[in-house]
Length: 273
Image (cartoon, rainbow, N blue to C red; front, top):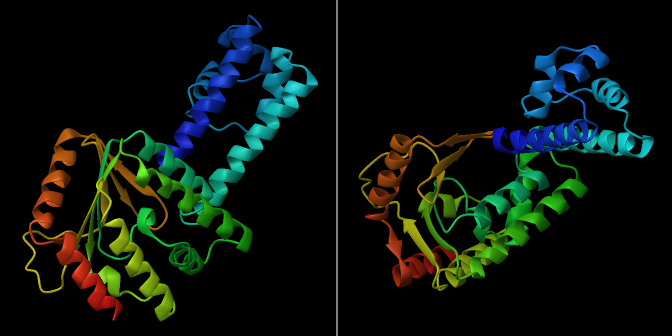
């Protein structure tokens, strides 16, 4: 949530700054004309504050924007506010979240992730994904349909040779029932098929394995530059090199007890039966 909200605010603030500079007005002068403080202008333009409709209207008038540009700004503000509210209401699992994840994944050459509870979104069938969204209990039917479609669109990246993916999934996650048996069998079959892609490495941590380390939650590592830890309502992003190194080592240690390739497909077949 923090990443998505920050990016939206920076984009909106950048546009406000461009409009002010195009009009040849300083931040100090705009603040005085609009009756606000200069730090407020700075916070808006640097994406640290989401202004109200009233605030944007006052700033637009002080800059001297035409009615069409004002309406466009207000529409953009409404869209951002709605997206953020939808994100929060959906527990961070709606269309907006899928779009943000897709952008992050396109910018990543190697993505590694550990999943102790459910099948990862990039590997889900459409119906399995729908069952996930249904059980979040926050999405309308229309929002859910858009979220499923966006999640399926993300998966096209799996077929790009410019990107590599490594997944670790616990056997427990594969046994969690999120729909009828047919849904679960189809999901297991999809995992088996995707495991044959040359740029996808799928490992399954079986129940019988003695874990070398305890992983308290799922996580995703992006090019060893950052780690994302998702909670039910938000996401924690870690960029400190020491944190990233810790998760890389955790992933590598868990990989030592995982089953890959034919061994992974064998256990998938057994679970399907």
